[in-house]
Image (cartoon, rainbow, N blue to C red; front, side):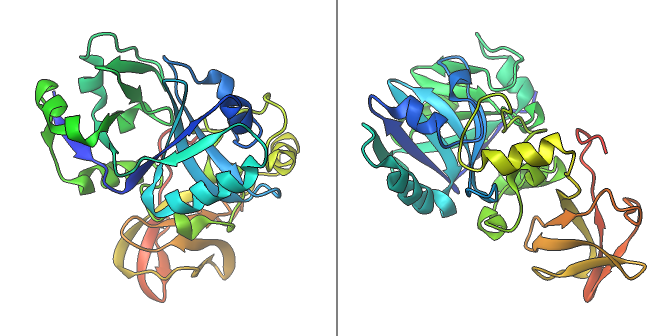
Length: 295
């Protein structure tokens, strides 16, 4: 069994509390807050009114409110955006990033913990702190959200050993799940093009939320022709916003060009070839299709 744990220092924790916190989130996020309980967490996003991607996060029940587990580089923007929507709602929004930390560990290790269940998003308490089987893909393992002061004692009791965070990033990228640099996606694609349906981040039955109309239209009219897919660099490098061509036909654009690159790809285009080695101005690369994505 792999006892590695990855301290995700690039994650932040917000906390939403108050009498209206549940309705407040239900009216904003792409998933159904009614799915979230002491035993179940969800993956969700915040979109523009046009359905374009802004932010993604996990939502976890904690005491009388909800943790928002998000990328640290986006946390201040999310905090401000939520406060803009608050208006007269009886809601308190706190940034607890200096108090709580996220630690991720493997699927098999999670199953060895008493009370765990093999259900995406299943949440159990370890000494009052939530452990969540990642609701996007179980191969990403589980994550513990815990007060920083208790972190290393709890990791010792769980027999978890700190490992290089790059190993977690590589796994996430291989699975086709963006591990970092989410700001590069903001306003550049629709939320549904981020594979949120396949990653259990959209509930098409929940009713209205910000961006719901266009998201539902794309789904119902079968208009999804582009998807966010990972890139494997073979040689050299690629540039952000670089156009991807095959036989002089545009089939995509690079959106994230750094360590764990992704592109928005016209996967339905007849010219798209998942086995083709594409050329950039300064290198070559392949477009990867995650195993869970049936296209």
